[in-house]
Amino acid sequence: MFWACLRFPGLAFSAAFAAAPEAGPSALLDQQARQRLIALPNAEAAAQGVRRGQSLAAARALCPALAVRPRDRDAEAGLLAELAAWCYQFSGHVSLVPSQAILMEVGASLRLFDGWPKLVAQLKDGLSEQGHAHTIAATPFPAASWVFAASADGMALPDVDGVRRMLGALPLARSGLPASTVTSLQAMGFRRLEEVFHLPRPELTRRIGRQGVGWLDRLRGEAPTALPAWQPPASFRQTIEFDGELDGSQPLLFPLRRLTRSLANQLAARDGGVQRFTLTLEHARGESTRIVVAMAAPQREAERLFELARTRLERTTLPEPARSLELHADELPAFRPPMRDLFEPIKGDGLDWTTLDERLRARLGDAALKQIELVADHRPERASRYGTPTAKVPPPPQRRPLWLLRRPEPLRHEPAVLLSGPERIESGWWDEDDIRRDYYIVRTPQGQRAWAYRSPEAQSWMLHGWFA
View 1: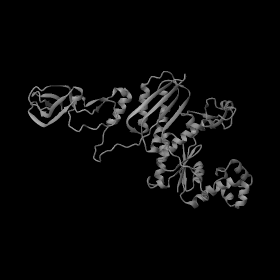
View 2: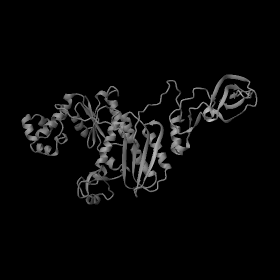
View 3: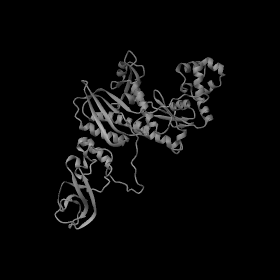
View 4: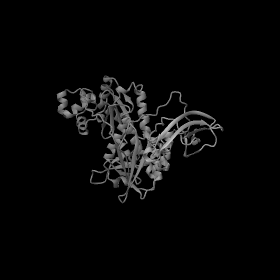
């Protein structure tokens, strides 16, 4: 097996600044402390002297422009699950390692992705596109991959002996052992892991306990590591709460993009799509605005989902500024990509029918578009009606004109040629609108193709439709 570890050092900031991206020196506050203490500073804040455990007043004295947010561990867990959903497309065994790492078995995927260099390149490109800082390392042992990913990016060691040699060269501070254990070992004169590995096992157990010995065994692959496999949920619900109130649709676009991308990641993990989801905006007085986004067919591309949701949001008049935004999808049906012919010509910049339908519905509303539906009635006047656009409608078994007249009218001239027919239609005896007609496809003296009939009672021709 070959385990890749993905660490996300900026995940806490990405979760806390979900409504608007961080800019400049920023820090997260520890919500569990009684005082307002700094939990994590970003690099710009740290460069100006802001440190972990510092009071907010002291941090502001050093950095007056410091932007702060409370640390949200629930949001961090949700964001880590979102990243796991995205990773699921690369491996069938993905495991969460809170609070900022993911382990996945990629040995079975290497052939599919044409080797580790191309696989790690896809991972890095995808994570960079999503804006997540990351480091990646891969070894045969999950614990070793987790340790190496903390200090090196892009390391891949498939050889077991090579992994153990690299582990021996690691300083104790990077071993993954608890800080108290590291301090205790350093006080005894140990500096690197190889010095600890050479200790007799009873002596090592006496010094660092069974848990410490167990961790070293897992590092070297001498004991198994239990990794529960993460499974994508069957529905999607995610909420972003804002620090203040956002007025208008433009400030909502950044959190909306985050939500639609998270939905797309989950859809990719399930190899599914979504045909309908709901945006819910909560307002200050407890009111809410619901926006339903429906599509003609299941979709799963993040950019397409965002554009449809954005169009619907911009068309909606919000009664008040919003305090939170939720995206909810109950059903995530299977996704079937559109079938294309091998020799089908490549389309230019034009839109396919599904995309055009979705855009028109998003901009004009669902009620603005209608679709012809078939009705189980043989009488041509009642065989179709306008309905809600849905999936494809099967064509009628008989050939019918595209332009059907609202009412039949006398044909001015006798047909020049009878192209096909007759087709006898006799129906409607149960509702006192009985008809009995013999339909023909005819060519008129002017060269037009028409759908005309003669009834047994009247021998004159009646025109009922035109063919294109």
